[in-house]
Length: 364
Image (cartoon, rainbow, N blue to C red; front, side):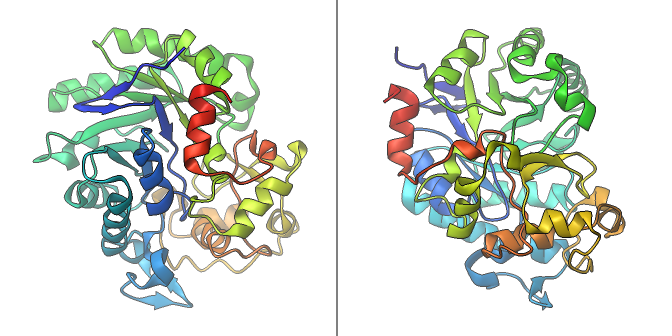
């Protein structure tokens, strides 16, 4: 069976596969550009763009780290990533950006993405009830919130329709097997009713109440069989993050790829995060340091997410998320934080994006 294309707003994605946005620096120009080039939807992560090309776009560094949200979410770095991704996929292929709702400067980063020529904006880590406010003047930019329940989608649709007279162009429904931050509490992540295969159909049903909003299933999708299962449940496409880390073109450091490829199933666990949601990643040296309260000093140089309250939550959980994700980006095995979906242990060798897209669509 061949897959139908995925329509998001005015854009048509030939293969209904959205590559998950992964920061810091896991999905930037090389990964996103190549996924779009191969007929999927490449997604650039807006997180930590001040680190791009050895931090040359960060206006000011303190202790070698971009200062404050303006430096960490560097507009110049973001523009350079988009420009270089376009060199790979061309101007005729849609390119998306993932912008977390929980970040400081959310509105500014959304505007930056619009100005940079991004076609589709995907937002999770909170309910983006005012997302359309920041895309005024860019009617062609498609907006895609990430939800974990039909109730969340209903709230977003009601607000958007009332305030902005518009609805989401698509919605991502994410289950608790995804890498990084979850839309559930620890306890909720384990409940059968919250597993992806059980939340897709209710979200599809809610989406149908608002017209023709395509639903994209995410969190633990691994191969062609998983894609077929999600489509059978009513999804129009899937989003996959972790599987794309196992590609040559993935922007992540080779050490980060190796951490995932060396991980065993039991090494991938939920952990506390300064963002206020549990996060999924690989147990490493950092995890053990944090558990003993011996982790690196927390200084909040980058001021990356609003819920952290300028480092207060980081101190409560024992690590700064901006510093530790950027350590992973730079390949630091001692203090890096390595996010992964529950299937990350299944990565065993690096292949090209083209080969992976072929596997996912042809099942080879």
